[in-house]
Length: 254
Length: 238
Image (cartoon, rainbow over the protein chains, first blue to last red):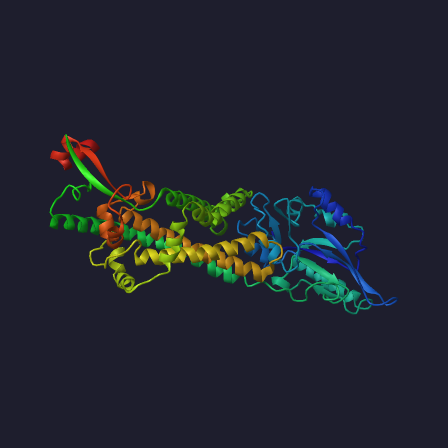
């Protein structure tokens, strides 16, 4: 499947929370957990208030820190989304530590985050949140089409919202969720340039070094064992030969 | 009936052996459950979270073994720490001869005390990595959720590299055990006098030559083995 993406148009979001509930019901998420949160952001002084309803949910980074750090590959990329194999998750919580958006949480010993509705999309349906949005703020489709749609909408929004802009086109290698913002990201509580933590140092450096040292030591001693063992027995034999045989030294079974 | 007598020298007291095997068991549980997290072919072990619980249980045992050692044989722990960090000129000489020792020769080495220079370095590194692996492990365990990317990275890299050091040390430990037939020291607690003279002659001289420090075991030698050793064992194998 082509690389997919979601569109979230903050200029249309009513903050009605329907997506939150549709997601919970559709994905059968246990009580106390949610994969979508809507945060109301208001800045400025009355009557010049500005703001938006900002979704706090997995943005499906193309270069996802959580995927890189996941030790069991329970998190992985598929069709542009960051999906979850919950059976493989051990609840180690590394993903929660490294996510630049602070999204994944550990609930009941497992990761809790949007695992995408790829199963629905494959059947020709829309994700639960998209299906249910009454304001037409959500869309799902091939990422290129979503970006084109986003550009058209931003151009149309510029009169009402001079700061209207696309978020997610380039961040973290390109997000799988394209946001249409009405205000600059920092105003809405989004990091303008989220950074990938230097995980390569660990995954690409320390881990291969550790495994390499272990394998090398096993191979070296495996080979050396046969040489050392033979020489040790030889030396023992020679020592015995040169010593007078007494009951105490005539004891070793060779 | 013919007898042969073997003189055995007490090398490790019962408490020391118990601590050793508890520590070893905890180490291997930790090693395998930890390896499941960094070696993808083993990651199925970690799936579901059972290995997480095992890792923590074994971690507590691993952390507490020095405490257990202090409680049941304080002298052993004190000697271990003192000897591991005390080096002499003979140790340097011994280390120069290490390549030969690695390949099975001991006759060129200067006489050694209770533990040789290689064992001293091995023990010292084990003690140091005990602290780095425990410290970083506790940080990861107790600090989860508030470490941030930088804290997580420092802790995991420290943990990984300490693991690598301990694993390599363990490979060497097992290697020398089997090259020099040293296993009985940790099972029965006794080594043959011949082994003690070959590897630790200064220590042997300091051991009181009486039971239970030195014991003599008499074994009956079967007639067949005594007269025709080699053919007899071949017949038995065939």
